[in-house]
Every structure is written in structure tokens, then in C-alpha cells.
Image (cartoon, rainbow, N blue to C red; front, top):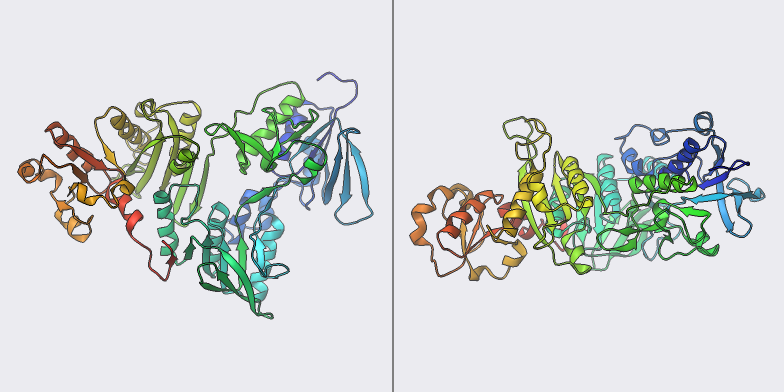
Amino acid sequence: MPNENPLRIVVVGGAAAGMAAAVRCRRLDERAMITVIEKGPYASHANSGVPNVLDSVIEGDTALIPQTPAGLKARFNLELRINTELISISKKERTILLKSVDSEENVYHLSYDKLVLAIGADPALPEIEGIKGTRNFFTLRKQKDLQAIKAYISKHESRRATVIGAGFIGLRAAESLLRLGLQVTLIEASDQIHPAFDKDIAHYLQTELSSNKVQLYLGTTVQKLVMIDADDDCSHLQLDDGSVVATDLVVAAIGLNPRVSIARAAGLAAKRGVTVNTFMQTSDPDIYAIGDMVETENRLAHSPGILALGGPGSRQGRLAANHIYGQASAYAGNVGTFISKVFNLTVAMTGMSVKALRHIGYNPQWVTVHTPDHEGYYPASSLLTLRIIFEPYTGRLLGAQAVGKYGVDKRIDVLSTALQAGMSVFDLEQLELSYAPQYGTARDPVNVAGCAAGNILRQEVRTLHPNELVGHTSEWQIIDVRTAENYTQSNIPSSRNIPLDTLRENLDNIDKEHPVLVYSRVGYHGYIAHRILKQLGYEVANLDGGWKLWVPKFVACKATLCQNP
């Protein structure tokens, strides 16, 4: 950008989005005067890693601080002003009012040519009677939250912890607190773990939490916190279902509220988050906003929303810097791709869930497969559960969810790329992906899911989802094609056992005038049985996901470990 005077760029916020904008501006303009304002004590910080430091998965608090002010000055010639708070913005004067966190008297104005706001979001606080001023109530968002929780546990020798909220942060906090030796209770207002996922997929996480002795209360909220022992900070949490939970400390992780008050007061357009165009400009063309504080378009919903993830924020920072210097490249919007660890499982998704798609007017189809993450003959192979969601007729990919021990990240990243490229399930059938026995299967789980979906759209197979069978078992001849041993151990009520390899010799025992539902352990043998019967003139359907998907849906938790399953 030709200019006789150095461009004055001010970035407010030193996390991923803000620093991405600042260092990109420097790479594009060596002469610019770039100032980064950060309210906290650290020049650059990785908020996403905070829950992982709690139980020392990441060693030391300083691991989340990749650079110092001196280091950023030396490498990028950035002027860092830490412990400095943004008070207000004057669009007319093109100045911001700043205040030192350490001194009420140190208040001053700073001029800018271009202003980039990356001030993030605050943890949402539950409306609970009695939490105000309580010493044992925490959130988990910043370094200071992490330090406060660790100090409290150490000082009070806490034994019991309660986490409110079963999203990514809440689940990670629950695991971290358990690994610190505390008894952990997890409370979630929704009737399932991790509401972003479809309920039957989320149930695998519920089972994992219960098996690790996390006590679950689902479909309920905390109404009141009552102090029992002021000296020890022992509390009782009263739930709306009448339950009472005894706890020594509480961590709230129910979501985020974008910091929009200063932007709104300055006259910038904002709803729940700050409104921006595809170049991350606000309603004032000299002011940009990026990261957790902005609303960006969801590419499936075609409407703006909040996506508080480090990856999109970092990309937005780069795009804002590009636009400042005339290298306009539009933000394409988001599809919502994220991943998390829950004890021994990894769970991830891209796009939208079935229930979310229905909520915005889609009528999606979906299929669920369970396949080895890598060849079964190679050590440590385990089943990966993969669901893909797609448009009827066209097969256009709308979403995917995966849960398993290994290989989840690879498959969801492939499917995220496919979704953003507008690919269909027919494209997934033919994707060429890397293969070696220790990394995958000759036909990758993504290929398998694509083939299963393609079979549905080509009408080679009819699937019935477990929820469609509930209350309708009498309408079907239900045939379990697993081995007799597996059938004896557990089965769907009113089903009968005809092992797959004996199916052809037992056709006389199957009524051709009555619909047949077949199922196997994971669905594949059920599919083979379906093809046999369909070609012989039977009206037949295969249970999506097989017995493995039916079980999570209809086996209740032990009463001591789960409420309202």
C-alpha cells in the first residue's frame, strides 16, 4: 500500500486471531507502526490449551505463552502493551482510549489508521442463586482461571469437583479434575453429552465418562448453591429435578459471550457478535473484527453465527491483514469442524448434525458405519464409528461425525475438505487416500461410508434407523444374523436368530408377505443379508449401524452414575 507515512495499525487482543493479524501485517509492511494491546499479562497466549495444563498433560503454565514482548519486538518489531485495557473507540477521531490495568490514573488515547479488534469472549455464567462472591466457583478460559483452580485445590485439599456444561471445555475439565484425584460430577442441561452431536453418537461419550466414574446428571440444571461449611467451602448444589450434589468446587463451562459492548458503544453494527463482511471489516471500513467476538456465516445454514475456535480466528486475522494491504481474499464462511478427546476416545465432527439440519429446514439422510481404524491384523486396531449426513437424491455431503480411539482426526479432516468442496457421497466412494496396514484399511472408512450412502441412494439397500424401530418392532420380522452365541448374550426384543451363513437354507422360515428387518453387530453382515433377501423378492431393511448403534440408544446408565439417561 503506497503511503508516505508509515501506516499506524493497532491490534487489540493478543491471542491467536490478534497475533495472526499483527504478524501478517508486519510480513506485508516492514515500515508500518504496529501496536498490539493486551489486557492480560502475557504478550501471546494459547487459550485453547488451558484445560490441558490443569492436569499437567501440558507441563507448566508457560507452555501456553509462545512469545514474550521482547521476543515479538525482536522478531516482528511489534510494540506490545500488556496489562492494558481498551475502554472506548472514537471512530470520528480514529483513536482508542486505553487504561493501564495496574493504575487507574494511567489513561490515554492512541491514534490508528487501521484498527483490528480481537478481544474475544467471556465465559457465560449460569444463573444460579448463591454463586455471587463464592470462592469455590470458577470458569476455565484464561491462564488466570487455570492458576486460580490449581491454587484452590492445593490450598483446600479439595476432594469433589462439579463441572457445569458438557461441551468441549466441560468434558476436558472433567477429565483433568478426575486425573488430579478428585471425584467429579458433570451436569448438563441438555439430555445428552455434547449437544452439538447427534444423541446416539454422543452416547458413546456418555458411556466413556461413566466407565471412568464421572457422575452424570443430564437434562437438569443447577438452581442454587448453598454453602455448608464456610471454612472448607463445602457446598451443596440443588438441581431442578430435586437432586442435591455435594461439592468442594464448581467449574462452569456453559459457553461464551462475545465481547461486543465496546464495539456497540462505538456505533459498530453488532448482534450477538460484531457484524463483519467477508473481509472482516465492521460497519466502519477502517475497523476490523476477528475471532470469537464476531459473527460469520455458516455455509450450510447461510446465516451468521458465533464459532469460537482458534483455527477460524487465526485465518480471519490473516485475511484482515491482507485486506488492509489491498490483497483482498474473502472469508468463505465456516462449516464447523472440531475435535476433542474424552478419556480414551476422540470425537470430532464437521458440518451439522441431523437434528441441527432438520432445525434449519433440511431433510437429510444419513448412514452410520463401524470399521477398523487400520487393518485388524496390525496391532492396536480398534473400531471407528463414522456417520455421514447427506442430501437425498444428490448425495451432497452435509456433515460427518466420528468417535473412536484412533484415526478420528484424519477422517473428519478428509470429510471437512470434501464438504467444503461440495463433494457428494459418490465422490467419497472413489477418493484415493493413503494406505498402509498400520494407518488405514485398503478401503478407508471414508470410502466405506461413501459406499454405504451410495447404496442407499441407488436403492440397493433400505436402512432403518434405530429411533424408527422404537415402538414399531411388531411391524417387522426382525432377524439377527449374528452368531448364536452373540444372539444369546443380547438381542433386540422380538428378534430371532438366523446366522448369516445359514440364511439361504432357512428361507422357508421367513414370511415373504411380512417386512423383514435384518441386523448384525456393526451393519455389514446385515447388509449382505439384505442383498440376499432383496434379490429373492423379500421386502427388507437393514438396521443402520447394527447392534452397536442400537445398544447406546437403549441401554440405560447405571442409576448411580447417570440421571435422566
